[in-house]
Amino acid sequence: MNDIDELLLDSVADALVAQGYWIGDDLLPSNLTRALLKDFEQLQAEEFKSAGIGRQMDYQLQETIRADKIHWITDKTPATADFLQWMNLLREGMNRRLFMGLFDYESHFAHYPVGAFYKKHLDAFRTKGGQVQSNRVLSTVFYLNEHWLPENGGELVIYDENDTCVIQKVVPVFGRMVIFLSEKFPHEVLSANRERKSIAGWFRINEGAF
Ligand code: OGA
Ligand code: MN
Image (tube, rainbow, N blue to C red; front, side):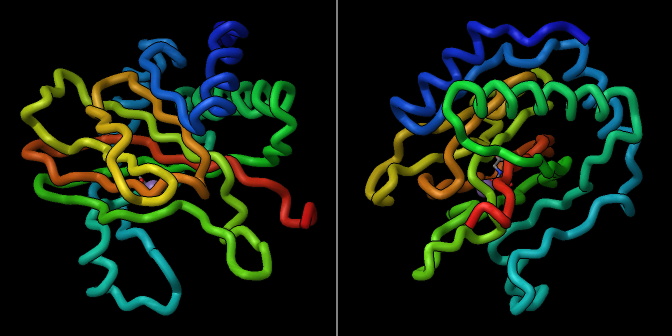
């Protein structure tokens, strides 16, 4: 495993402080991205499941909000183990610089069939009691789509904190990583005319910290 670029981590931390998000194409080595794509492609259709949104929600309603299919990542293959190690270095790098108290990381492969979308949502939000839903504080999305063109659609649209305007439209090209504060930015995935592959992940804080 290569060393993570400390200067790159500096710029991720600076961007999180200045604007709450970072977008870049060279956080992970491209041979790792290719190996992750291979792992993804070797998974069978039945290893991908519809994602749950809330326990109270029925399946049909869920499908009107998100239509991606997911497979949770464990460290079972060399590529996924390597990926989790890199994300751990990112976790430690942010904790060292920003004292974020990031405790662990959960992630899944996400497969969006042609036409699939994920309606506008927050990955976490504070309830009245100050609790953060699911303890997610920092979201990551990593894209595995080779030769993706802007006309393929499938952008990640990020809205400002007050949900009044679009601040970024991210084209999900191979090797691109988006990192953002989970509670801050409503975002959605537009439908694409090609299947769309990504790894979504969340750094969490320890529940005991409340
Ligand atoms: C998510 C998500 C964004 C993307 O899985 O919560 O917002 O671009 N994904 O895939
Ligand atoms: Mn999301």
